[in-house]
Length: 295
Length: 210
Image (cartoon, rainbow over all chains, first blue to last red; front, side, top):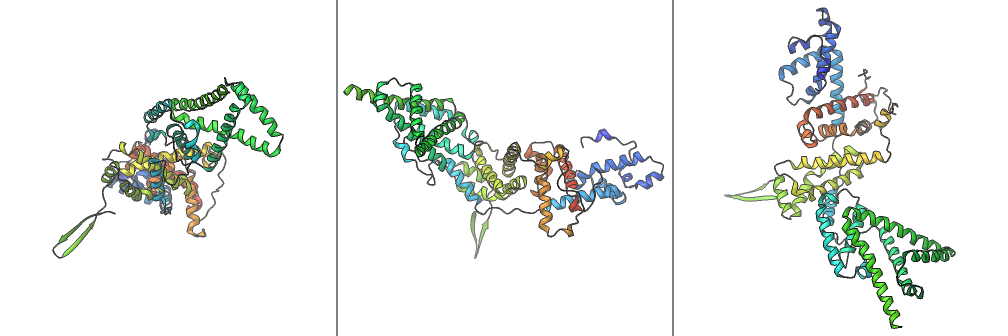
């Protein structure tokens, strides 16, 4: 025991048989009280090993300890109490386990192996989204995302994250890396993604309006101001105001989710996402310019 | 249990049902046989669930932790040393997950008995005498014991559960938790001592100030 040396008894018993001497007997033999306490202390130090009964206590030592316990009421009570504690804990017995646990485990493993499992809900709008169009930049980005994933040892990198964050990441990976996706998303995230897409559609529509055409060198500040003006108009109408508030809130939530989902995947993928956004703007600008030049 | 062989001896047909060793199932899993891993899951899910349940006290958490343990084991199976014990490896993953879970719970503000004691407050459970025969049903005693175990500090709880409920030896616990045997024994000693004090209503005896 680690603190055995801190409490050296004043007198060592003469062999293990001495432990069997009752305290009263020891006192009669002229030994001091502190010596008896020291013996009891040493005996109690041995109790865990005695309780373990794992061979750490030699048979002769074990016999001596039991002999002491039989005649020393204090040590005997201690041994009895600890034995009963162990018996009570062990009496807790087996635990009732969910019947379908192994199925749930194998299901999770299948999902991890193949995120496009049949149970996943589909996101039809993703495959037709403008920002998922194939491009050379996207091909490079896909390779980069794969490299980032590999470097992060997916077996351990993904494990510490929550299931929700994981499913969001899968959705984002799919967005970035594939043209058609089937991803497993919580209903709430699904709803917010739809709202965010609608918001993006508003931006595209704005670029095609006269105001948008007048400022083809897209200015984020002005776009923000324009959104603010729209918000003011919309907020004056109760129902639309609430809807627009939800849209703006969704945008913020999406931004947070994107950041938290992308961050563990590496800066390369974050850049890839930003590139997607820029690509969408460039396409919009290109389309708008062509329309202007035709006129 | 897989059917390993069917032998015919004269007129007698003997069917031997032999469990495949863990190492063989691991090898088959690594070759892509998910049914082999299913075999390992079925073989050890009870032990893993039991450890998680006794550590967390929640069936939902235990179920989640068991799933997470097997998923992690699956994804890291390539790093498993096949001469080691698969169950010990699973226990190691489970115990780490349980500790993480409990710490996260604590960080979220769950006030445990340990905190109360650390702050010098008396635990709600007073040390009045309650002999086992006074308990209405055995379940009531088990409830008290389970609560006492759950209120142990994590490192003590872990060794008590492993030693007395998972039936692991001190050496196995030491290997699993990567602790010296002496440390495991010390943790066990302190855990039992705490339990003795907290279970005095069930034990029906006064603590003697120890």
